[in-house]
Image (cartoon, rainbow, N blue to C red; front, side, top):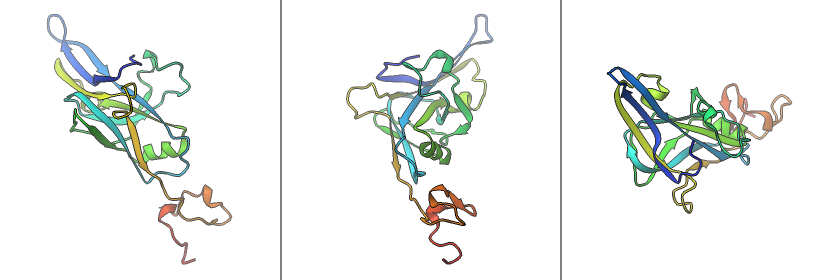
Length: 200
């Protein structure tokens, strides 16, 4: 576990190597975890993008997934929380291109937007896609690495950030006695897209 790195060329790392005498040797897998304060968000954002500033290495395709660690950890994550993530809840699509000299945009999906609305922290794990996330044996000669900067880097010009567009409160009336604040959808339609119900 690294808690002080300003950047890491192995922010995501997948290594499959040969063992002594041939055959499969040990695997090396590295993942990165992030938490963003979303305590001020109570309405589902219209959209959101995780932005990571690239560092050396860009050979690993990556994906953002839901992290499940408790944000009450102190003072940092431990090796026992390496699997504190949920592969069944990806927060993005596969990212196959990566700049090592600027910000990379990772559009977040509806599951991530819901966590931003419902939780005080948006917790994200960045993992290698083709083997780690997909549970595919990398064999004996695979080296895939992608790097990026962390918040410990001097200043804020390369900080990991989540940019989002605030969601609309949508239909602002009670429906059958239910307060609008407690209504997310009407007949499957997002409240932000409802102007009237049955013409009223």
